[in-house]
Structure formats: C-alpha cells, structure tokens
Image 1: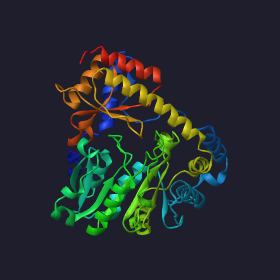
Image 2: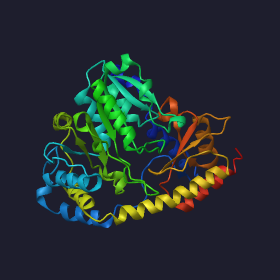
Image 3: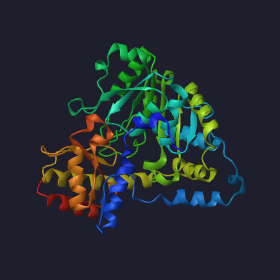
Length: 388
C-alpha cells in the first residue's frame, strides 16, 4: 500500500529547529565538542520556589485527574493579577484568559479558531515558523511583511496593498522579536491596532519575551493600547521568563470572543495543562521577581560579551534591548545557510541561519545566549579562527 499524506505537508519547509538538531547530532556522533547557540532554550534552572510548588502539587490526588482546558480558576486569576501589576491592564479571568500547553500550542491552534480557507494571514518575515505553518494547515494564504533593518525590524503597514488588507483575517506581531531581537513601543502598537480595526483584522501578539529585557527597557503589552480589546489577543509563555521551556505552560489573554474561540478548539483537541504545573506557574506569577532580575542580569552580561566579540571579528550586530538573541549580519561572501554550515562543520558551533525564519532573514544569523559565558567565549574563539 502506498501511503499518501495530506498535501498541506508539502507546503512546509523542514522545521528549522529539527534540522539543526539533526546536524548537531551528526557532529556529536563524530566526537565533536558542539556548542549550541541555535535554539532558544534557557540553560538557567527553573527557580526553586516554582519547583517546590510543583513537587507539593504532584502529591495531591486532586491534581491527578483531567484538568479543565481553560485552566484552574486560580491560575487565570494569577495571570490577571500579574497583567494588572505589570501592565496596568485589567482582565476578567473568567472570559479574557485561557491556559495554554505552552504558547506554541496556542499559536498553532489559534488559526483553527479564526481562519477559513482563502483568508489571508499577515506574517512577519523573518518570523517564528509556527505563524506560517498554522496558516497553511488551515487553508490560509500567507502574506509576508518584511522586517528590515532600515525600519528597525518593524513591518511597514503602509506598504500592505489595499486588496490584501481587505482580505486579511489575521495579523501576527511579535515584540520583543524572535529572531531579530527588535523591540518596539506603544506608538507602533497603536498604529497596528488602528490598522487592524480599520480593516477588521484580528491582531495576534506573541509576547513570549516580554520579561527578558535590559537597560531599563520595559516591553509594552498590546492590550495597553486603546481599542486593542476589540481586535487583539496576546500569547504569553512562562518558558523564557522563568526558564520553564520543558514544563509546557503559557496563557492567552485579550478579546473575550477570541479567547472563547480558542477555548472551543482546545476543548476538542487537548485536555488542558497538568494542574500541578499550573500550581507551579501560579508560584512564579505571584512570587518575587528576584529570579527574573537575576537571570536578566546574566543574559545581559552574556549579551555584552557576545556583541563585543562578534564585532571584533567583523560581524555587524545591534546591541539588543530584549530577548536572549543576537541578530548578526553574515560576511558579504556568504549566504545565511552557507555561513552557518561552515561554522558548524569547521568549529562545532551551532548558529541559526536567518533564512530559516523567512526570505527576509537572508543575510543574517541568530546567536542564542543560552550557554554559560565561558562557552560563548570559546564559540567566538573558534569562529575567529576561521578568518572569515
């Protein structure tokens, strides 16, 4: 029997991080000491108060049963109080917040709730690959919004053709941004909200990196903007803030109709977040932010070290105000992929080609700061030896 899989799979490029893992394993199998600066997976441990809360919750039989897809009332209340404290945004925990099995799950499932075949999705380019896969899995048509250095890696909404804007159903934004590490202010978010309201477009903001920030930068929530409640949903994750990537817990907040639509999908697809993990998340959201400050200080030290080192070997890059990424230009005689491949094969250092995030990522590579400083120094030492 010849197995035929869904044709939609043919529209997907190889998932970027899966390919990086394959190449990394190949080098490791050859005995190479690989330094992985490819995937944004924090090396700093989950704070002890969060671990302790989970350990205690695991022992309670009440947490051994199916959870509710929306999340514990106490979890959604903790999310709402955190938003009030952090952004001065008031949320109704019953109707404007929903637990997620990590923000990636919510980002992937949200198009199921809002797209019909043929709807246009406005996608940042470069951008997180799940924006595109969620679009094509649900019959949407992608329209890519280039993020260019000359526009501070913000999309120029004025360049979106009128006929595209009329058919667009959903716009993705992501600030602080992955992969460019760009940040924004409320002025741009206001412009985006006004654009979406004028064209009746749903605005989905991926806000996973809001708390990984430096130099007194405070990332604004789109929900701080007047009119955002009419069109916007924001996806957040505890993965980066509290070094909880493996725990798989996040949340969506915003417009109650959009939250309800996402919830309707989730109740038919998943069984919610393990309640003990929600208890751990509550401990993070309601506890001291000392660990977040301490971790940001570590990332900032790594950022400064890495930016100085990359510039010293001729790789142009900005000093990012947020995320744990550095977006660097490749030497003029390389493509993103050829440079990343040479670095990996000749030095054992994994970096991410910008082209893996979209066409407009060509000419760049992304460095992740999720290894100790001494490993970053070793990585730059090896790259410098290439004499690029």
